[in-house]
Amino acid sequence: EYSPDGLGTVENMMEYAASVGFKSLAITDHGTCGGHVSFWSAARNHGIKTIFGNELYVVHAGKRGHLTMLVRNQVGYENLLKINNLSYEQKDSRGFPVVTLDDIAKYSSGLIALSGCSASPLYFGTDADAMSYAGSLYDIFGRENFFAEVMGVISEDNYTRPRMIANKLGLTMVITNDTHFARKQDANAHTVMCISRKGFDYTSQELYLKTREEMLGTK
Image (cartoon, rainbow, N blue to C red; front, side, top):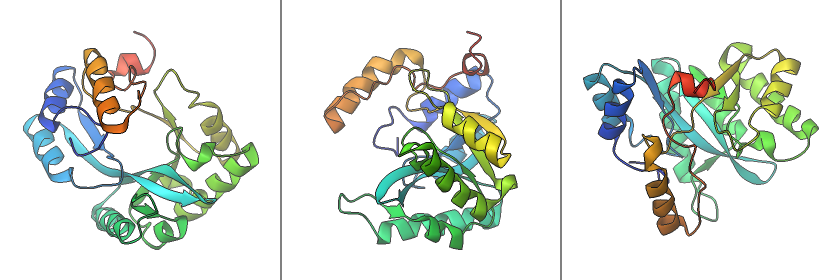
């Protein structure tokens, strides 16, 4: 609802999430915290815990990539808002709200970083480049607040590099669900929406809210 490549409403998402047994959900819209209040309100009405976050646009090695950021506590939420607000003060040439790792380091307290999806700087260059980037995040957040993210999108290799940095840095790996619409049957509608908004097919068949069983590959 608040992200340019999301389909449907927060209420629609929560109704479905509650119906399949979700107890908690994170909100990590692209470059915005604008949906936090309505997400939290709808989640509370359906007995679901909200994990606040943001998929930040981070500039690294001269390129813009994605970084998943989650809130651990009140201090972290305040810092996430500071980072988000800063990003809108320094938009890039295409109008994207961006920050650097140096910006994030100033406001890292109370935050948790995940290594990101396939658009993360983790995937920009060589394995050595990936390790350098991961090492920078490790220096900022430490092992307790930095996790190697495996995103549950079957059509992409979102496993090899997270496994590499987890092994070399001693990180815990986490599985996340890249959710742009609620139900599997909404995939075609999401494709039409993305073509209308962006001018290309987002290849969206996997971007629905998967159950635990689907995430683990048992369905």
